[in-house]
Amino acid sequence: MKFSALVAVLPEDLEERAIDAAREAGAGGVTLLDGRGIGTEPKKSFFGLTFEGSQSVLLFVLEKKLAVTVLKRLNRDLELSVDSKGVVFTLPLEHIAGIDTRQIEQFESRLKDKI
Image (tube, rainbow, N blue to C red):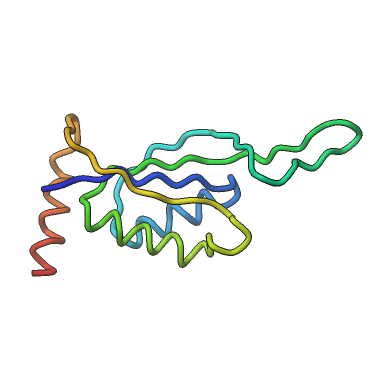
């Protein structure tokens, strides 16, 4: 079984919607990280203070095909292509340790259902 890391970098206000959409698409657990980013557009300033919106970084470890399904679902449900609301990408994982065996059983079950 091949695994991928799915990484979603989103505005903080989309975090809960992203988690719900990912779960509905079949994802299990997620690791949440706080982030900041620098885009191509200058940041807004107010009385000399620069406003930088908080971002959430969601990290999922998923079976490879499920990762693509979740990526597509996040892109669709959160409309990420509109106004550059965020970015979602996958990375292949060569070696992995510590994943819950129940998670692997769920991946296998989904694969069997599709076959």
